[in-house]
Image 1 (cartoon, rainbow, N blue to C red):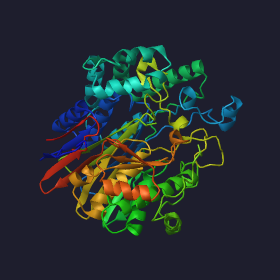
Image 2 (tube, helix red, strand yellow):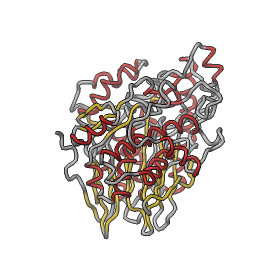
Image 3 (cartoon, rainbow, N blue to C red):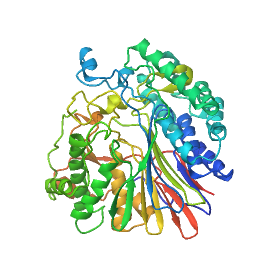
Image 4 (cartoon, helix red, strand yellow):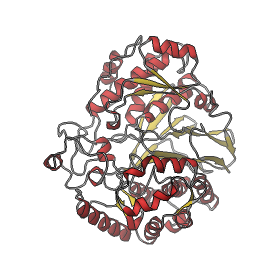
Length: 527
């Protein structure tokens, strides 16, 4: 049995940062030492991660964050989510003989989103200049980020999607170059341009992507790649065991997290969330909320928003849960792993940010603006359908449903925890398991993150279409729990480690603490 976590909890007196890259964590801590806020540090961490983890995130990807201002109980949602290009209509896809949106290539791409999240956060709460916040990412892109074992493996696994010679040449030599350095001078040039002028960056980015689209036969039009598209709105919330859980509203899948927790609190059996009966119950719950997502979740700017926490909705979902056996998958055939990264920051003043960013799948669409070192996100191909009547049907300007979200949990004394994880549809499940343990079971973050994890498949993501119904479980799950689940009709697939890395930050007395579960690379450190 692999001991993934052990005691990885870290402590600090002023601030805490946890990211998927040691370079990003240290750069964010340096910003805090220089007098920056958690919001400044979040921009720096996000930018460094696009260099250090290029398979999982990039400036043209998506972002979803939950943040709190010091001294305020209000939780805010920050999103920078790509949209369908101007000519991405169902009719145009059908005219090319497509029965679904292609999963890769220029036709799968959405407009850039992550840069918009940076701009929105910097405009409202940034205190340091762009040049300072982006300097670590520029330096790392020029000098090169170390090629770790994880980086080399992810490049190897996704290299085939890079159809442009400039990107294949950039990443190809590093599939077996552990310990070497991966440079991206185009990305350094992009961030220098942003530090100089957002308007100049927007003009150059829009022109580059438009030219690329014309050359490759995409659906982009001039003006599609606006940068100032970030959105800050009140976070979506619900109360669980006396704590307010906050997350991102539609079109992210944050709503499913809230539904999962509300239904679990209503239906749970005796014992903890890691007991056999409750693992089964939670798997039934996520099955029902995935079905709700396919039928109802879309971009609220284009689709009349449905209230995911309406009593009638929760009652209907609860009525479909079978407490004794696995139900037949309701959405099989409606339509691999996603590549995403999550980080969190707490500062001395009391500001906090939990942030998730993604390129969709590894290296996103596989095409992009080579001169800017920028790959486009394939969220349109990963998520949208060609059925105009569906809430997630493709339509120009519509944001496809997005698997990414972040969360926080607060009580009368303020933010207790913030956290998140990468991992496509697994995010809804793994975050639910951790929050159920923290809030309903009342265990510590260390215990919550050290519990055996599981994943219900298939989820609602198009990438899981055709996946045979089964439950993936950690090898550390007790034998009697596995036996009970098998008896309830679950086909189990035992794995050494299930899921992406979970990160949790919090405050305790006069200190701050943080931990990650060690399932992927990264660094959690305090100051």
